Length: 548
Ligand code: ADP
Image: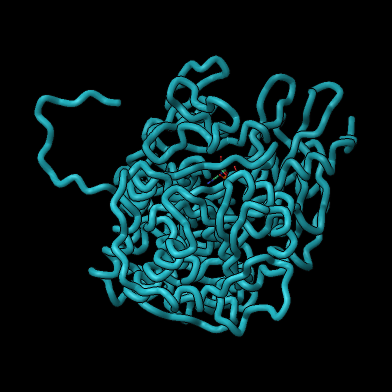
């Protein structure tokens, strides 16, 4: 589609395929380990080379089952070595790996599997009841493969054609040549969480996945190296664990999978045992880990760096990690439609002389674009806005790992003049650091002006008694909408509405002040660990704000 030069380069034309990543790790970092907390309850360890051998067995097995290039094979599993084998065994053979989120409702899972036309489903045996619930609704799935050995197979089940993973791969040879094919072929499929309407599929290609792995491993991004021990806490069903199953083997680092044990204590103990240096997850996960460490007066002996994204990292959380635990925080932003990484936080040389407070303000932004992602902000009419750190507008992106359309054309043409509208509202400063003000659907429209909810939540969470906060717009007779703050206090804490509101004085513009505060026991959290503001808005739809 692009014109050819009369003089083309003369380099080897090797397609960018994900199989080459595992081959590289198996050959050049053959003894780097993959350690997994298993659903079985024990710790499993092997090397990249072992992983490659078993992924090849799986590729042979899938071929034997009739899976061909482009066919979709789904997984429903926690982070672990078998899931990793599926990442490579499925995509490496030319089929398409479709990761399913086990926190979704069975009807939603059935919708997604049918929409994707999945042929097989591989799943952790702990999800047997869930698979039994939606399998009858997925007539197109030819077989279900239970991640486990024969002793984990149920004596009786309603699932048709249930196969045992270990038996299946052990009956096939590890002799397998990964096929070479067009790098633009589909590699993995991931559905958006569908907070509004049905979930839509982002269909990544081998090329986009390999480029994203390169881009995200770079020093200005996640900075993964062979000296790291990386624990992806972010699930492999949440946008491919932000690409870590590709960027870690590409870097030769050791990998540690936490399996289903995501509570603070389990994550802490595994980190210590395996000397994890780098991790990644959404803020709600770190809340559990930080609370566990603080309550038990624990320190980290190896943990040095973490990437936090998926929703805004509260400044109070960043400060605790840096000041109490000496853990560097990389605040990153992205989305399913972007593979997912778009920006990553960090300091420039010119920031190094600044005060700690000023540096913190920069680190709290969602960060700088990484090569492979271009971005801009625009007003409602599509006019580009200046990068002055103040003007805010719709954030648009483009690049080789950003979708051009959704799977099967759902939602029609999504691009605006070649740019993908992210649905986020942001500022960009003169150094290129982007800061999300809000999601456009969460912004509070008060008397024709916009109030960003992330700022208000951050101020609330900087109060020592507050554990979590979410701000939503509630109907107001005069101003259309006004902010209502929903707060969860730390255990044993007591706080009055007036005291919390007084804490906002001088920190935000007066007209941004929340009109009211409600104290809740918990906030609704969705399948990827994010607070579901749409649920909160529904819950408080008829809430009457004080009129005085
Ligand atoms: P979904 O859109 O279905 O929730 P994604 O995981 O793709 O699933 O979410 C992407 C969205 O998450 C972004 O558009 C943005 O609104 C939000 N997000 C991601 N990272 C951050 C961050 N660091 N700060 C604020 N918001 C973020």
